[in-house]
Amino acid sequence: MSQIPKSVAALFPPHEERERVRANLLGALDAAHARMARGPVTPDFDLDTFRSELAAFTFAEPHALEDALAWTIAQLEHGLVHITHPRYFGLFNPGPTFPAQCGDIVTAEFNPQLATFTTSPAAVEIEAHVIRAVGRRAGFEQPIGHFATGGAEANFTAVLCSLTQAHSGFASEGARAFTGQPTFYVSRESHLAWIKIAHQAGIGRSGVRLVPTDGTGRMDAGELAAMIEADRASCAVPFMIAATAGTTNAGMIDPIGPCRDLARKHGLWFHVDAAWGGGAIASDKLRPLLAGMESADSITIDAHKWFATTMGCAMFLCAHPEVPFSVFNVSTGFMPSTIPHIDPYVTTVQWSRRFFGLRLFLSLAAAGWQGYAVHVERAVGLIDLLKKALAEKGWTIANDSSLGVLCLDPPAGGPTASAIAKAVLASGNAWIAAAMFEGREVIRACVTHGESTEADIRALAQALNTAASA
Ligand SMILES: *Cc1c(COP(=O)(O)O)cnc(C)c1O
Image (cartoon, rainbow, N blue to C red; front, side):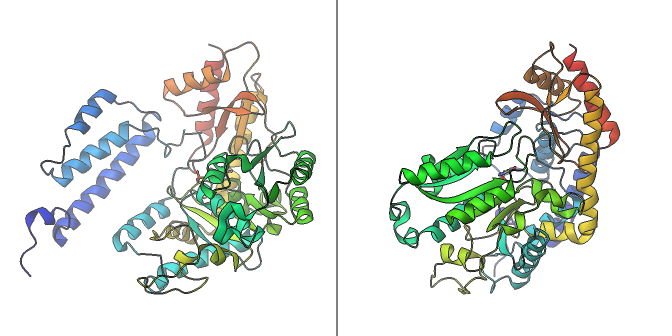
């Protein structure tokens, strides 16, 4: 073989060069990590300058990799809302665990292809092991399932499984196999990726029934029963109920038992979307909040929410080993194998597959369930502290949730929730959101970072009070 040309060596540098660049890179990231925790939560760069610098990358000439890396780190350090900041009290984007970050490095190095067991037996089995452990912890006796890119993909998987179970003709004919509009039921406070999912699944957006809530953010089971009856009477075809266990906005848990009973009565698939709230299974104290989840047909739990792995890591757990294969099976000559129920490409949405599960494997290995129990209980404790601090100052707690998220009505007569959120963000001291809860605007704060402290909570309370009395 002739020598590797210089231009190609930019992509595949020699060993010593890799070693040097990587050591410098890790050092630079550690330094940035330390600076970020002390700096503002919100972006503090000049967008126009950034854009013109970015435009200079025309790719006509190569740049030195180390320069490009240094530039990128600087832009990310100043051009993001830092969800890795202990005073990010925002959406369920966690400060990622260090073991998960290590997992990403390892995955990038081996770049295993998890489409088949044959090519990556070690990686496929590590994922299956974690899925079984999490599934059992969630209450399934013999769980199967897989890692997905996010809760939206896992919920999409639930819809495809339930449609395929509901009608044997769905596999070949799609939605027209049904005698009427296939419909599924989620609460109006559910995560509305369901709308896109219905579109993607080919049943159409009108297949989603948004069930009214009961005034406290939970699905109204009486309304659910009535809607199913009405749909049946009008020749629609109900096929799934999905209860949310920890709504995204407010951490509310739908009545799991009554939803399951209605699903059983009507022969519907019962799914529990615990994308965020599912983290509570780690704690013996909090797990009872999710009681009934074990009787579901399938469950979504995101690893990249309360389990705090890096982004793009969720789990679809299923109680019926045969169903995912019935949905995703296909055989082609060019794949190294087709092992029913085992090869991920015949049991999941994806084909080429990244080694997502390593992040949760390493995190669970390093902390144990016990470590995660403390992690989730701490978040709940910090939110309780915030509740007390604000209740004293005239704020009203809007959501009666025992999970680590708080929705607040600001003190009467002061600025609106969105004005307060805007002022807090502008201060750079903390990140919170304004959100809609039961039809009105509230302030929403969530503890998502394992390193948030009581001092961070006091700083948030102060920032909120200052904004509310402006
Ligand atoms: C976040 C969330 C989702 C969507 O999950 P992604 O990981 O963002 O795809 C679905 N359901 C609930 C309840 C969620 O909180």
